[in-house]
Length: 239
Ligand SMILES: CC(C)(COP(=O)(O)OP(=O)(O)OC[C@H]1O[C@@H](n2cnc3c(N)ncnc32)[C@H](O)[C@@H]1OP(=O)(O)O)[C@@H](O)C(=O)NCCC(=O)NCCS
Image (cartoon, rainbow, N blue to C red; front, side, top):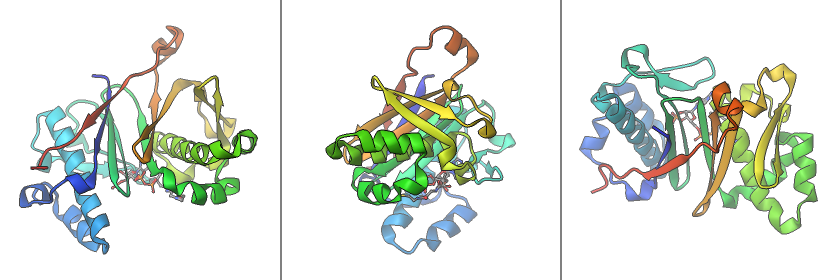
């Protein structure tokens, strides 16, 4: 399969007993802990999306899937559910839940509203690498807001693909945007080759979605084409 990105707008998803029945006890308890109704709903939508897509791919009932988390909190299928190697990552923010799935590559995904740009510009000196800051400052002022959101989501997609979250220092790797192509340089201490990743970002209504997809040596040596990310709307249970 190509790498597929499933998306759903929580407002289009109807909560129902059938949807709730897919969650395990721990997830139902976690869902109840969210006070704002929108966040509670977002959590439900995320769990239903993740379980439904993986259940379909594995030919298993979605409610039977079990998960484990690594030491930095990244979820993966538990060995008893992992009948086919599947890599995935989820991101949720106000108005959108996205789920990136691949049978071949390590993946990471992040989404944010473009309206978060002022907050990210204020945080920029603390979260962007020196090279990213100088490229940002060199842009015309009207382009800086978009770049801040794109950069932030790309950086999050990378730390999520690595599975380490904020344990990776955000100024230890830097994105560059030359000739419309996104490339990554990683400090040696982070033990990675930025060239093994493909990054894409996309404006999706009022959201930005960024993806990180690891590529194999074969793909790199063969003059790698862009890895296609196939976008698919998730609408199960929405009737
Ligand atoms: C997990 C993390 C990497 C991303 O969190 P986030 O951007 O707040 O949230 P997202 O919705 O994009 O991602 C959350 C999902 O990532 C997954 N996740 C959790 N830990 C992860 C890790 N170490 N690696 C990869 N994925 C992880 C989980 O599936 C989680 O959703 P779930 O708990 O509902 O299953 C977090 O450590 C992080 O970076 N937080 C930064 C938040 C911040 O500083 N914001 C301020 C600027 S706006």
